[in-house]
View 1 (cartoon, helix red, strand yellow):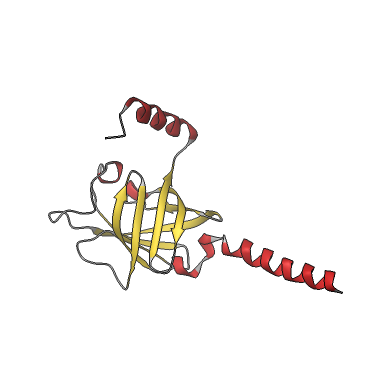
View 2 (cartoon, one colour; view 1 turned 120 degrees about the vertical axis):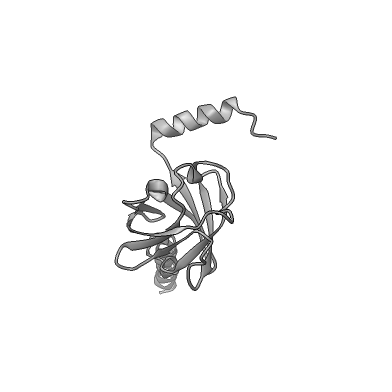
Length: 154
């Protein structure tokens, strides 16, 4: 009898642990996120009630739609720049998102390809979201060779 109870308890924790790792189905994702920090292809967002006029952000919706408050600049998302400067005002774009795996989402913005791509949800809490852009193997290989040739310890 004790063995059966232990098996039931272990099964319950195992199932809840597996379910907790599915970040793309987490209801915390479905809200408005404003960009607070941008590193090399890692975007850190903080939860907000709505978009701020001069800050970039994204809003995930249940029906697979996504709204983006994004800058038009094609170089903006490929550099180490800080979020939007005072002179740049983000525009509103409508796109779609879908679950690629338990911790990966694919974003598509047809009229602004800056944030189109596959992203790993590396952190999702009540107040913070971190997305890391995923590249194909050949692009990753090129990026690795660039990283090796540059002195990144400065």
